[in-house]
Image (cartoon, rainbow, N blue to C red; front, side, top):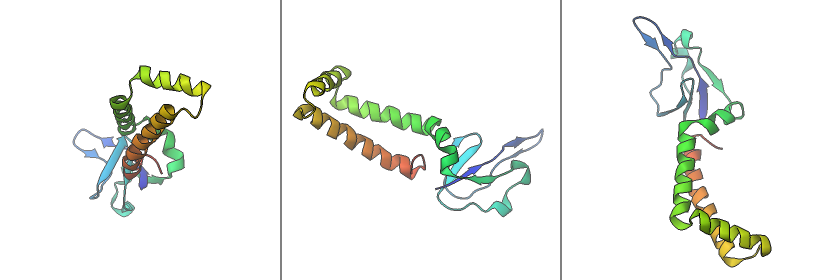
Length: 128
């Protein structure tokens, strides 16, 4: 994934923004991600489009709507299998016996759900 920072320039008669023909993820008003390279030569100079690295924007990606929505879906999927009360009960049992089979089964299911959603996050450029 390639990440780009840009400015949206709004004047009385026109709006200038990043120019792309590719599928683009707009993470917020000034940050987007594309699978392919962006042609910087066709960008409006006023928009000050620059490529940025994942490391420099990781915190922003964690706060973007896409990431929050996926995290909510993860919790929703977990709750389809385990209520909060069930999860707490099994966690308390694991304190006494870390090898409790029901606790380990729950942890395995939770990790399976997270792994599935991480594929989506990775495809959207939210994680690497």
